[in-house]
Image (cartoon, rainbow, N blue to C red):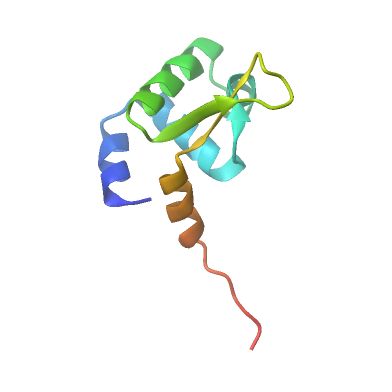
Length: 92
């Protein structure tokens, strides 16, 4: 996570931080899946998603298997940063 994202998240409510971290660990999820994984009420997840999307921290796209649902994930820029933070040991 870069410093800009960290600063944005520090100003957000705890529910938005939890939703962000859930997406960071679990990958793309629907609103219902986020509610299940985070143990937050659907209404709280919906508010967190709106807040995170407005700040550009996460992206919303159409769910391919069910067009009535939306799939949420870290923004492309954030996802690339999160992936680069993971160290991979290569064989010698």
